[in-house]
Length: 158
Length: 266
Image (cartoon, rainbow over all chains, first blue to last red; front, side, top):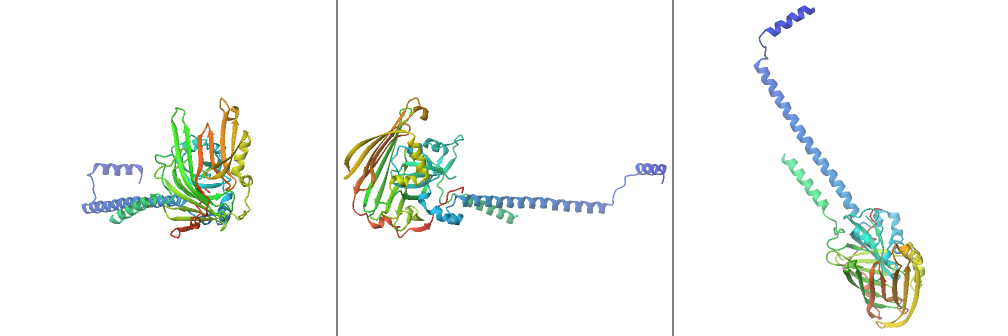
């Protein structure tokens, strides 16, 4: 077929009546299209649910980790090799920051260490060096008290 | 569809359950300056034997603010020591100095038993005792001097280092009888130079201490520091009889846990 013959054929097609597929073929095509389209929508919905479940599981794992960090554990549970050293309470005050307000207080005879939660601004008021601008967010700290109940030292634990 | 709904509801319920505060957490400080979470451990700097006593402890702290307003707090506690050197301190954690605790004050009891080599922190609210092994390096009857005890700890060494930088003047106040016991008094006046304190004038810090040689405890002390206010510590109702032995034991209805919560972030 040369170019002239091809062009003649195309002109013939263009000039002729519109040609349509048989009615039953069109109906079958539409039915098949609707079916596949429905499957695709279902697949998207399923993917959304699976994604939500995965996000939920990830959130639970994260929350569980945070809760575990806050829950009381014995030292031995976390660092068995350190349990013996940590349990010797007298040696466990070396990392307390001595508060300026305690400089003039009498020497410690009996000491108590209590854990408190307080805002950074309160730590600064106690004389604990806070480099950054104190926020309203509370922090956990151990406070070393003397026999008089007055604070001698602080260490931030969180 | 219904199955997926149930899964989502279950996930949300689980997340809410995990988000509940744990038993150790008491939440943010409320109207007070701090929230008391619990006692960690307690110890005695030296073991004193053969000098039993029990007493009430009263501590008053006051601070005058720049506008003339005044903050005053008072705390109380009870202390006891038996002939063998066991000590007990029972304290209501309503305040630390001029800082007040949020919520209703919680109580904490600290028992130090050098005979058994154990230290306990009791939580009367939860009926829980935490038991810790303590150093056996210092046996009963071989009391370290306070100075030696302090020098063994980094914390006190730092404090001592700071204090040595100050110019201190000590005045002997003689002996007085306080709450039925003889006490030796001294007044120490420390001067913090203006250039060191960053103040316009020197700062004078005065500490008056009354120490009982018999009981080997401070019976009364009074500290006046212009930067932090004034605090007065007093032992009252001193009884020199042998305290009840049960004071130094964990009550039978307490559950005993080993160790103590670790420092977070370790």
